Amino acid sequence: MKLKLTIARLAILFFVMSAPLHAKDKVNINEEVIEGKPDTFFIGKTLEGTMRIKACDSCDDLKLRITPDVKAFLEGKPVLLRDVAKRSDKPLVVFYDSKTKLVTKLHWFTK
Image 1 (cartoon, rainbow, N blue to C red):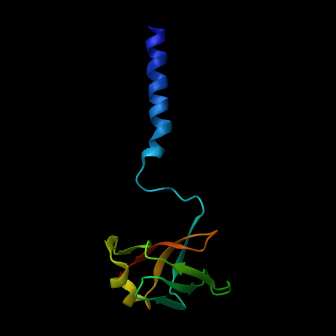
Image 2 (spheres, one colour):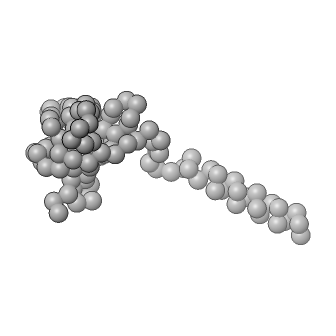
Image 3 (cartoon, rainbow, N blue to C red):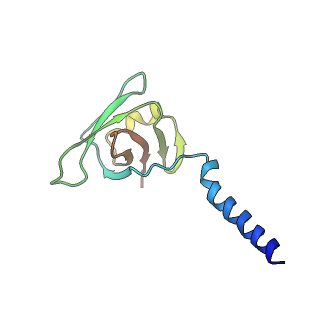
């Protein structure tokens, strides 16, 4: 009986430990978040571009790179990056990799 219980516990432990390996989205431990209105925002036809944004009024500008891999959201719903590029004058939430300065997600809200 103890052997079956030990095997069951090991199976559960193995399942829990291997679950992150099977996740669809990779977890980026370097991901940072900043909220505000960008000072500059440019996306070209290839969906590559740059943006400058400040975390606070007294903070330095943060220059971030935009790639076609950026996931864009409007009111929590996925949208195409090229469709939201015209909202560049609106406040947004930016998720980016703090080491590479690459934007990973952009969230716009109208409310």
